[in-house]
Amino acid sequence: MTNFNTYYNSETIRQVISVVVLNEHNVLSRIIGLFSARGYNIDSLTVAPMAESQYSRMTIVTTGDKRVIDQIVKQLNKLIPVLKVNEHKNVIEKDTVLMKFSIDNNLADIDVIARAYHGTIQNVTDEAIIVSATDSSDRILNFIKVMEKFNPLEVVRSGIVAIER
Image (cartoon, rainbow, N blue to C red; front, top):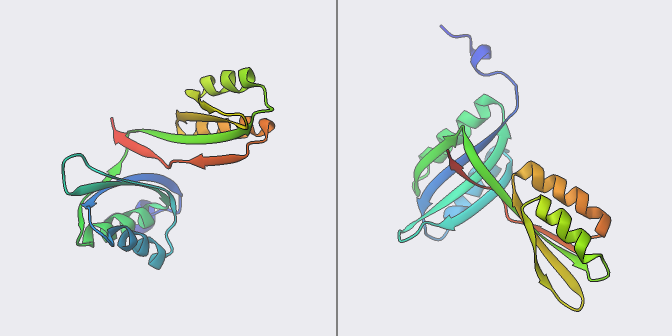
């Protein structure tokens, strides 16, 4: 018999979970309610309809020990609008950020740094420069940190999208 503590240790892990649900009202609030009622945290949540179907795909990033992650998956599988739950082990994941800067900044410097993070200048007006970058979450966090020296006026992140390799 396996020792309970051997299987369920207290090591915190980060888990990407995709959930296929019926694309109908109240489904998102039911999923959020499940996490909220049990005190589980959602680090990232992205939802989009699946092409030419009545379903949506939710990509949820959460953290917890093995026991918590197992419990989240079991509870998600019990919800009626949920059709499929996948715990991803080997994924490609991307995060996107949009950042707005004052036009007083050096456009060339911003462009060079953005390109290093798979980013580009999206728009330039008389008042602002808007840059987007898409990369792994860690690199996007680093990009935001690097770009702080240009005093961003606004920063908006998309949330993580992921797909199994």
